[in-house]
Length: 172
Image (cartoon, rainbow, N blue to C red; front, side):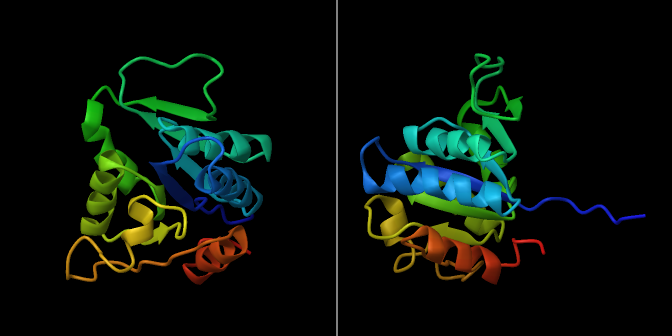
């Protein structure tokens, strides 16, 4: 009998607008993770995190969406599994904890709260660099001095794949 293993999960945090380099890379990241057998966890609340989920789904991947509302979203929501948390911004803790690592793309205030929670709970952080937002600053300015988890930057899908492999998130 074959041993069943839990699929690795990566949370996609952040924000970027359509037409930006960060938005395009979010989509490429979602597709890459699907191809590598990684479950994508995305709230789908920003254009970039939604695009990552859409591209992961299109590539045949599994997407879990943890949303702040207490109601199920429309049927066209880009997710395999939807978890309506009903806890508003407290959902950020669920997002920080739901991944074996957290991919950080751009970002604003909500993103930095998720990043800090992920850091406190020792989740590796994979910030996109060179495209602006919180993710650009994370390697030089971690949440605090404790070095709780690795911060592994990426600026292309090839670099992202190397980081995912370095973390042992790609199963043979």
